[in-house]
Image (cartoon, rainbow, N blue to C red; front, side, top):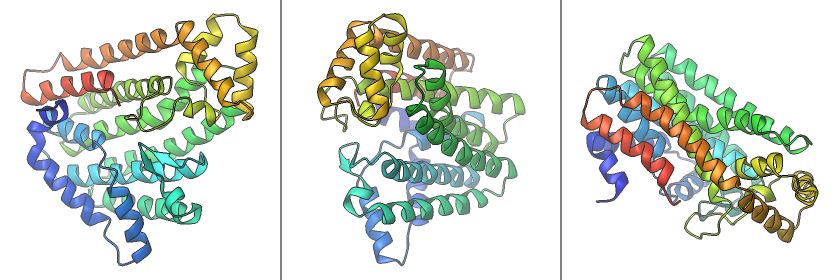
Length: 324
């Protein structure tokens, strides 16, 4: 049995309910929209966020209809953000599959993203929980702000790790934190435990994004994106930012500037990736990821022993140790 299958064991029945509700939420009478939705379904994602949400809800009580609607709402919001991000980044591929904008066009992609966002709000409303509706709405703001911050950072000459963390907290960590907070709210957890859950999600989300960023420095068809793809989009992530700020190298700085202004060639990017590797950037990123893993683990080990606790610890390890 693979690791994800082990993680899912405590919520196997509820995951079936989630999938049924998610598929039903995206049904439409529009042929074009149905074609796009069918394309999105072919991605066969790991459902990392719904799994986390359901596990945390079960940690504090039981999985309710409110929990399931929260999970569907957040997965729709996540999917919409990816569809829109691919348009903004002019990406033609997502995890080894052609993006919506590549298969159809930008107009269809944007409108599909809008439809998914609207459906996300419908599902949030069905939770009948003001707290959950508010936290999901605020996530929509955070994701947009994170994307705008990332865009503005491309033209920012300062090579800052602080800005990098601001972006990933707004984009990736906020999504995981909202999943865990909504889960705790749906299970009727106390205010203290709701905050505990939110922090757990934030720490896991930061680990998740750092791991994704590390992937970009290595060539692997399984990962589903070419090496240096982030740099092709003008993004400098933690490994290279650490190297640039801790090893004096004028040529590397010049290459970083070219990445930011969109003039870097494939050879330039290859040189900058090699510089990051040789200067301890990958090791530093792994150390930071390990620090956030420990923060998350410290929260989990306080809990009474249970199958759900075991799955959450395994989930955390999977996020850090996965190979794609």
